[in-house]
Length: 432
Image (tube, rainbow, N blue to C red; front, side):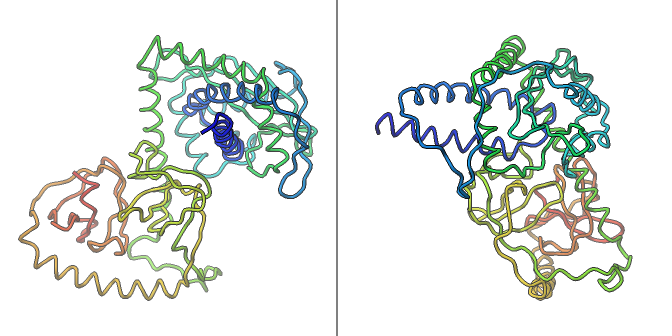
């Protein structure tokens, strides 16, 4: 393989990374800032190589997008500190709201935050003690009244005695009333995305990124426990957000014994189709459970298709993978196949018959099961079902740490429990 070939491959990967970084980045909360810092090292190395290549290569014709949209010219202007009236006040108000968990204020300043981000903001605020004064640098954005802002700060957490350095890039826009806001709608055009990518690899931006990376790396050397603290904190926040989403989902389900409203009563139409298969919209990890700290089973490439088993309320989807089950973040999936709801209902009737047969088989196989008494502790959030089948009716959700009264641990991988005065089942893998 020639040097040119290797460089072309590296360049393609880097461009794909930059596309992802600009299009899919959300309002990253403090615990994620460290990841952004680590990535700046890669940006700096690749940008230096890119500069060398540009010096050795003749200027190429002006790029155009797939829609023949002329790409915006990217000016070489220096970073400015505290130069735009109103931007410092915007981010000071925003970070104060993050510390206080004031999601109402955050929603006014950001367009837009989905339900998961709002919950994550509220949860993260519980661990933040303060933000020391911020350093805010800007460059002109792709449109009039827009800016690319680089916000550097050192976060102080309650359970850690040293401030943690971090920097985040924001796209700031001006609304019709002349007020600044943080734009996170993800609807930028190809020309805008091109502009933002080019700004990211300008020399002074790389120098600023390197400054933050150096501060972070020095802190890791001086205090190796910091990285472990941040990883544990991130895992705890994600766990709590997942539980909150699951509780919200459960609260929307009709209570046991209550009559559900019919479509005629609510004025809503019965869904005509349900999703049975999904495909990935970006390169994404496939994991053993619905957590970003779970073991990775592999990676899904753009366009890979999976059979959808369940779309969970915590932002994850359970899919069939390599003969078993796996989990992928729902944000990176889109429907690829649907079936008529009536077909699903018919399948459900057939599954009820199968459940009856399974219950009979469970009675026959009782000699292989372990009869016990007392309680079991839930290790991870798990559905409580009417029968020992993932297709059985859902009775509720058991949350991590909850105690369940156990009747029998069965040989088929299910544990029979008592739940609200009736017999129910949970997967044995989720209890101990």
